[in-house]
Image (cartoon, rainbow, N blue to C red):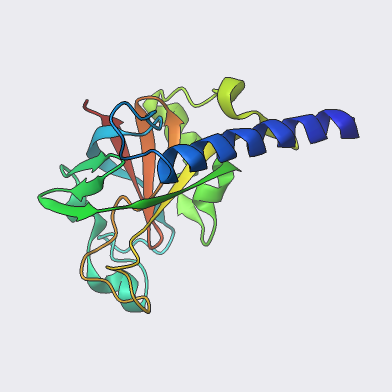
Length: 190
């Protein structure tokens, strides 16, 4: 049991090492391997909403009240080795952090309605795809991605709302975009 668990962790670590080398070592070279989320995505709708919902999705406090997540429905997100784009704004040299987490981390930090699993079932989203990322404690793992822009983000002040800088890849065509306690559904365009 412990040996099989160690083998799974070794596979995950090997995959992360390959991705890290691919991003940092040759990510800008012609013909570099692409990460599974590279491409263009369309934000389709607000997925899950905090239980503090009051008629808009401005449901938080402090910096979370700076925007309404519904304003981002219809935006395009584009991920490449060289840049990240949200709408018309492009940010160069993104640094992608890749992690493997179970789907319930989407609901961390609050109580969201509907529950993320209920939402995916209602939408008919196939998220049972453990062939790539494996399992931990019986839970399927999904690719969770953070994007860091050191030149843009400084002492937690932003010159943009960081939509699309944290997301969970559910399958090759669907992702949940998470930011400041709000979650949006995005689908692959190209």
